[in-house]
Amino acid sequence: MTSTASRPPEPGDRARWEARRALDRLAYGPVPGDVERVTALGARAWVARELARPAPPADAADLAAPSLPRFGRGRLGGGAPDSGAAMEMRRALRGEAREIGMEILGERLARAVSGAHPLYETMVEFWGNHFHVFARKGLPETFLLPSYERDVLRRHALGRFGQLLLASAAHPAMLFYLDNWRSSARRGVNENYARELLELHTLGVDGGYTQRDVEAVARAFSGWTLRRAGDGAAFHFEPRWHDFGEKVVLGRRLPAGAGESDGEAVLEMLAAHPSTARHLAHKLAVRFLADDPPERAVARTAARFQASGGDVRATLDALLLGGDELFDPGLVKVKTPFEFVASTLRATGARLDRPEGALGALRRLGHLPYLAPTPAGAPDLAERWIDPGAALERVRFAFALSSGRLPGVDGRGLEEIDPFALIGDALRPATRRALATEGLSTRERVAVALASPEFQLR
Image (cartoon, rainbow, N blue to C red; front, side, top):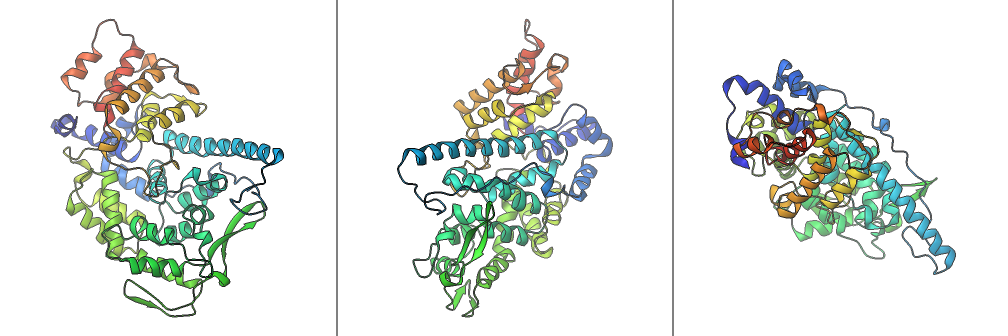
């Protein structure tokens, strides 16, 4: 698979190859006519334009926050009495939660397919995986997801990392998921959020912190909880639960008596830490360049992150345009299932009328947003997504789409598609022979192209 993508394009085709590479990496692949438009502009100029585009308003997303129901005796997540009425209420709530989940996931996929703001949507997905919360933590979690998607991920996707970090830390969805809403110096400090904050969200597993730092950070966030606010939930600092003692985090002293600002000081310290810059630079390089990205790209990106005060656009500019790695044929990436499904819909011009068919395929492929089983989110490595079973599922999806059997997807017009154009110029001889097989209909050739090893790469 990698040898095909690593073959340098012919000189005359270089501009088209770079255009397709940019669209594959930053926009879930091209729609018909995209490659020509980006080629005319120039791939690097197109990337620069996307980096400079204003982000759409976060509240433009059709994600109205649903009313947060009461559970049990008014306690969030508490157990309801075992009665027929209570059981019926739980069934109704589970049904509503499924509808909310379908709406959020469908909106995420539809925006990726539309391509109206490609780099922005890519970063919404990236941060959603980085600051992952699990929809099945409990019924309250699902009801908190619409505002998390809107007010954390979409509002800060291309802003400053420090603001995004604070927004995620204080959001009820994160407080509930990692149990910080229960953390109290009186009843017992919970270390779940502190550990994931250091290991996953900021410094990284090798970022230089110790268990004593985890304990001090957990104490700093004691009392960061949530409360009901109208029909929803909101952040609340509860002084009676806070540990007001002196704390030392990464060698820095937090004086006694600070209260809520303890947590804010920790977040500010972590957002500016060199290990955070390195951790995020490497993760972004894995996303946009290769599973094992070049050290020079990581170092350059980390330096810009620090110099810019965590400005996401400046950091991406250093990664994507500060060197030639984005357009290095030797640096390949396998599409995740989400990228594969979005790119097939974009490449074929299929219309996503309803999301259930595409989301069902993502469920079978094990890659639905908000459903990764651990706080680490879904991995962005080829070894996680390519095995015989996953490859077969991708083939099934390709043939279901091309044959018009994918629920909710309007595939009219697929007969007019050139199957060879779906892949581009880097066809293996075996793929070229398969596409030229006599007796295949155009729709079947489209399915072969979508299922080909070449189309699995971005």
